Length: 137
Image 1 (cartoon, rainbow, N blue to C red):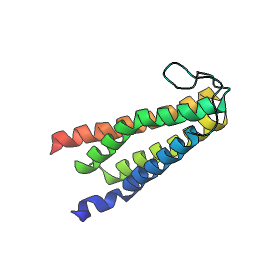
Image 2: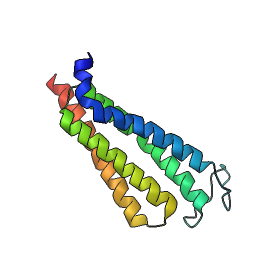
Image 3: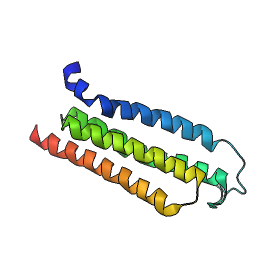
């Protein structure tokens, strides 16, 4: 069984890297006091507030976790091209690290959106390979 998984080492490492990034974002989101809170307890939307940006970076990462993990694992399980799976998973992780840095350290929305879009394309590509691979079994 390990022979099937070994070619996907970079994708598996990306899943591990994603877990580490999520923990870092969780910790970062707990620091600082936001300028205000909504009735639900979340920081009031204010991109000039670093506490809000840290919270949004973490919540945004949570939103894409399910699709990334599911698509990556499904692509591995159906035996999709290891080269492509590794590339898309690695680029996804790199784009999300970039997005987290931009999200937390700046207010540059177009750059943050560009990183988000790259990650989205990677998830869609992984999911597409998983679907195609599932019907080729």
